Image 1: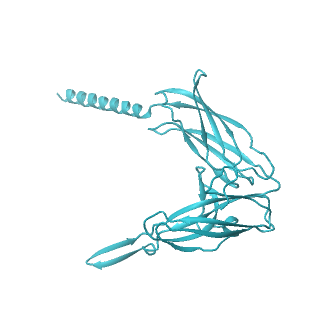
Image 2: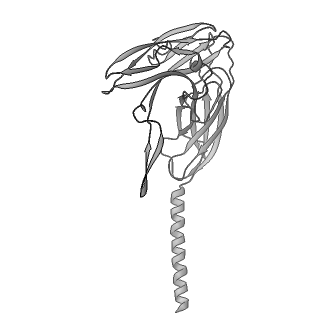
Image 3: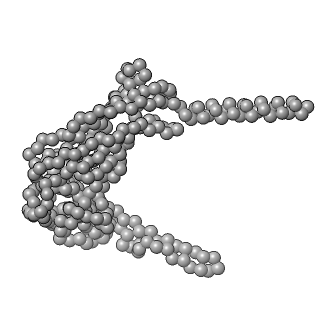
Length: 295
């Protein structure tokens, strides 16, 4: 198989081809378990989930590019323990395919063939007894990144930024990023935390996951440093949008953007516990007064 020419990653298929071309390659599959495996092989499109994680679609979902264009020579195999096979495949790029980055993957799926279809059976022996059949399947995927060179449409926007804090746990920050363009990005965030006096308290960088074409993601990152017990703070964030891969001959890296949010750190559990203690003391005093009146 062809390794990723940008990183040398042997687990991804990365291509740059023109519309109308046919890509021929080979996927190598090995059974590392000590049991015989019956596997299904198929291609699907990819997307990003709400948190920004790269997701290969299920076979039953709508496929528009990689999942439709890819032909796999062998879609069903039985592998003995330790057995390795090479499976040829083709990607037939339509002549009418427009310039863009098309992302998907080849999925190897095993399991479920011994347990039957999901469902429920019941036997009536005085008391009704029901047995549920559960089908468990394992999916492993190899990513495919296909770039058709041409006009690049960069249309990515950072549209939201807010702070979250639960009753227990550390504060976190959520970003909303909308990619309406035709290239994939790996947005990265730099967050600087300032105290009420304007002094820099902490700074850290985090990846926000994958922003694929035509997706909206809302990744959340946590403030790992132990925060103070109480105080008002300002989080200033900047986001850059480096492309996942160079699209054509362009060297585009998206735009830098900046946002900030003010927030308080309040030890809510301690406050609630203190309120509960005060409430208990007040109730005890009230009962004691009531008893003294009766006397």
